[in-house]
Image (cartoon, rainbow, N blue to C red; front, side):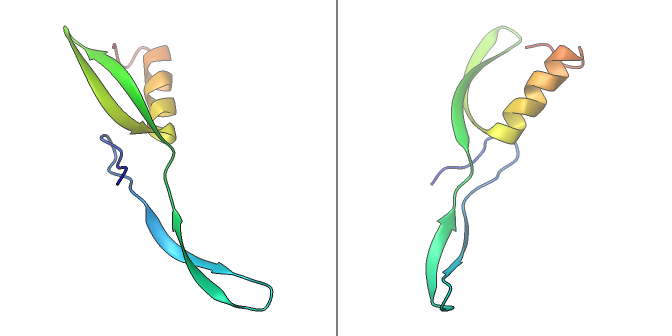
Length: 67
């Protein structure tokens, strides 16, 4: 099961609802990407959701975080 290493986001469960109100189970999966992130002198391969990846990129651009 895919899980974000930063925020812990993982699949959620719900139902598809048709026009006739038939309900079938479904899964909402997070957009997980594998990225190698350099922290200090060590490289770490993390599974990161797209939202956390954007947050990391923004914090690096603003100078709040150095990777």
